[in-house]
Length: 327
Image 1 (cartoon, one colour):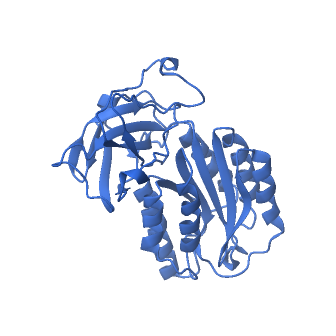
Image 2 (cartoon, rainbow, N blue to C red):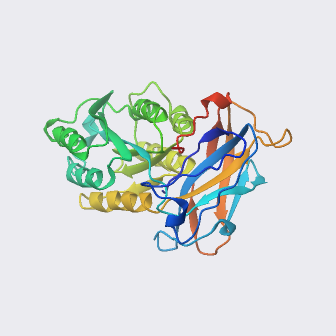
Image 3 (cartoon, rainbow, N blue to C red):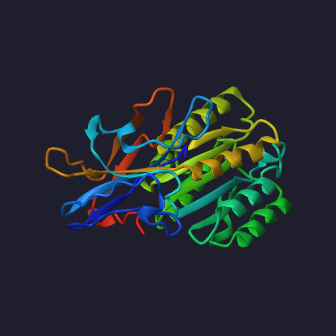
């Protein structure tokens, strides 16, 4: 998406792994996905991501041989590859800033674009929940595959006056915790200014919670705060959490920019590539469990930009690796 995410799966002898969208089979695509039988008790890291050209347009038609993967600076062999349109199952969280600082910053401008966005992306394979936050997070629409239920909850915020402090980091920690228990590609869409003045969680831990949960963060960043220091801190945080998780920072500087931002996210969700590679395959290559690791996915094609997470977390136990991308 800018997008991606990490998942770990314990794989049995001869298991062929695939992540297909909306009941597709491997014969549904003109470009067949890579599927290889894998050895016993290995872990697979599955990463969803997008590719854009120099104009920011999504790029289709690339093959596994067009990409290189490095984990902590070491090359990894791609064993699973899917072209865009095959990642079907998704779990989506929506966070909307309703703190006092939003009173004069495009109040309610996100409501109708969000309703349209939900109507386009939510279906039987793609579920979502919506929440608002000020000094605490409040769920306004429970996790559902029915867009009408989400739309009602989102529209209810039109009558809620923005008040209180801004506990963005706490809300991210709570929202990613909800998504962690869900299957599929995990995405958190945040509408806010990026500032925080009321959280117990700090910025670093909020980012790490998102990485641990395998959640790609898309941040619809509104007009910054009142001071230069607040602006700088907010911009830095939004840039870090979106880059590290494989999401996107979408700057909105007028009310009409909201619809453009959500259209961009919807477009990315329709153009996800998927790569899978082995981790911990041999003692010399095994990762240290319970730690964060660097990841780089790049393309050999000039003029293209890969949007993928730059870090992932290796669970302390393979039993935690119930791959959210598996079906």
